[in-house]
Structure formats: C-alpha cells, structure tokens
Amino acid sequence: MLLWPGPVTKEEALRALALAAGLDNGIDDEYALFDDILKREEQGSTFFNEGVAFPHVRVPGLKTPLVAVGLTQAGVSDVATDKPIELIFLLLSPAETPDIQVQLLGLASRAAQNRRLLQILRTVQTPDEALQAFRSWESSAAPSA
Image 1 (cartoon, rainbow, N blue to C red):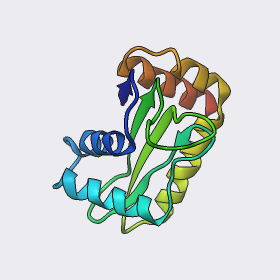
Image 2 (cartoon, helix red, strand yellow):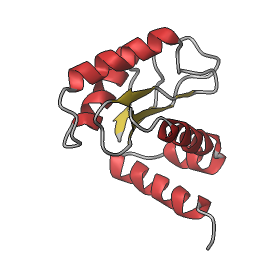
Image 3 (cartoon, rainbow, N blue to C red):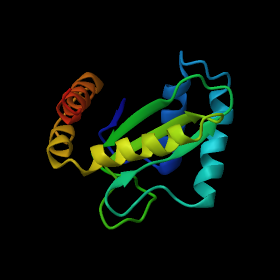
C-alpha cells in the first residue's frame, strides 16, 4: 500500500507499485516487472475516467496473485481523465493461471465501486489505515456461510 500526498506521474506510480509488489514476494526482477507493466499499458491504458486504474500483468513463475494499491491525494499528473486518478490497483497474476487475473480485476472493480470504501480511503493518513479499510470492506463484502 502506497500513499502519495502530492501529484505523481503515471510512471512514478507504476514503478513504485512494481517495486513494492516485488519486495519479499518472489519476484526476481522488479525492473523487468515494471517494463512488463509499461508494455501492457502501451496496449491500452488501464487508467480510467472514473478516477481509478487497474494496471495488470501476468507474471511467469509467480506462485500466488499479488495486489499493490496506491492512493493519490492529488491525482496522477500526466493522465488526462474526467476525474483525477485516486486509486491504483496493480494486479499481478501467475501467467500459468490466466483465470485468476479476471477474478482479481472483478474484485478490484467491486472495491473501486464501493462508495463507503472510497470515502474512507480519501481520509486515510497511513498505509496501515488503508489496509484496515480494505480488510473491513472485504469482511463486510464476503458472502455469509
């Protein structure tokens, strides 16, 4: 979880999220991961007018899916969207199981559409507070047994 109080560029945000995701998660080369993310973005931007971004890439050899989240309080300075980008979900999935990427995209999309969660995320001051907001949302969104 990363927080940017001031404006951040798309490249800065993606690089920081790639490095954060790669740390201690079995990704051998965070810089190659960043390059793969940029290549994916060249195919079509994942930064949308609704103020949210879903950059995603399949990573060969990755054992479990990873999600790195970035919150921007002043938006992404070099992305022209109707609403400033406030929330970036970097979604990494094992290349060998492509269905997981679709599931991650669905989960991130549901989170980004939850108004209560977004309100809370706009007020957090630390990554721990943001993580707690996601955990609360996840537990309330989970289907009852």
